[in-house]
Figure (tube, rainbow, N blue to C red):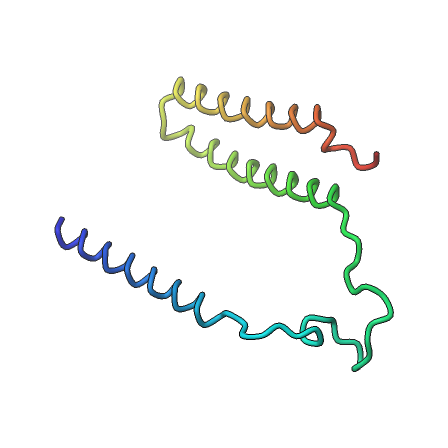
Length: 117
């Protein structure tokens, strides 16, 4: 048990030292307008290099990823049915699906699922 504690402390110390070294070494010593501007064949750009970004599209993509992960979490529930207590399986599965449905209802109620406004 003592060896496990010592190993954990050593790993944490090494991690902290590496994070401090990385933050010290990654600091830029100077900021130059030319280095921070986008490169366009050696000339100053005619317009902004930053394209407008649709925040609504980003939120819909994040919601899609979240529900995609939740569906991936539903697949093992069917396999677990063979190895677990039936009543406990029903309680856990119904609770999980209820949380998913409440999240979907909340997103729908907030209008986050509407593509156009």
